[in-house]
Amino acid sequence: MSNNTISRRRFVKDLALAGGAVLAGSGAAGAGEHSKRDRLHVACNSYSWLVFYRRENRNFPAELDAGLGELAASKLDGYEPGANNPQELDRLGPLLKKHGIEMRSLYVNSVLHEPAKAEQSIESVLAIASEAKILGTKIIVTNPSPIAWGGAQNKDDAQLRAQAAAMNKLGRQLKAMGLTLAYHNHDIELRNAAREFHHMMVGTDPAYVTLCLDAHWVYRGAGNSQVALFDVVKLYGSRITELHLRQSKDGVWAETMCDGDIDYPALAKRLLEIGVRPHIVLEQAVEKGTPKTMTPLEAFSKSSQYTRDVFGAFA
Image (cartoon, rainbow, N blue to C red; front, top):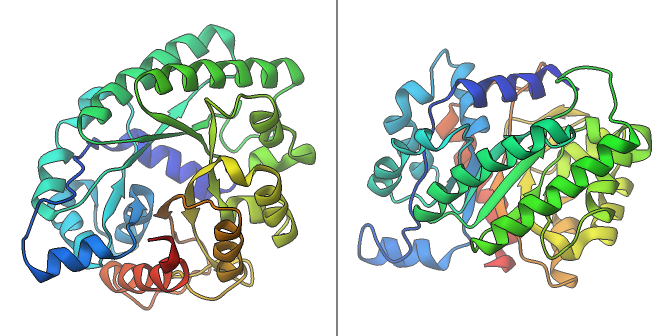
């Protein structure tokens, strides 16, 4: 597990983030709004803006109003925040409405491999999801927590079975609410023949558990392998409801979405071939070695344009 993954978890716990409303057909009238409705909807995860602001010595949650203004100015249509409790969904909604941004998905942590904690975690996710639904959210993305973030411990078979059962239960209850559960992973789930990742697919019911394909974490977790990434699409492509996008060059995260280690045009082509058009969420981030040549607004403007160039047929 990389330090960047740990930082992401810490950022999610530190934020007072909130939900938003689906605003299709609202906001500014006229030709600009028609153009926005016609183009491919591209969202971005909160983590991306947190780390891009941090490298500018800025604080994204403290500047949330201005930050969401920059997000909208970069031609992004949606925002996927992280949330730890329903109370965090009090601030974001009015700001999203102000800037004409949707919140079709929400990211939340969960602890599902320990039966004693799983029930409480499920109830917490459901409470957050209930509030998010009111604000227009359709997809709840969760990455079941490891035994220890950044640790070497791996879940044993009993823990994997318990986690899969809890995922099924959570997904079933979310579906009853009219919401979709999407399973997300980092690189740790790809260890030991990717046993955790695969069991969260094979050991769960597709009717209740879908896949948020984080293309680069699969790529990196498999030792920088596009073969592994496209095998995952072949195995579980029909379950992909959300796609997290990040690019690297020579193994280091790039400053923007661009041509690089992952052949995203080929991935887009393959998804279209199998009839899958997932919700698209940018998750470009920075790590040691990432170039620093652009402001956040410049970087995300380039990323949103590249994404529409590659995935435009999904609109």
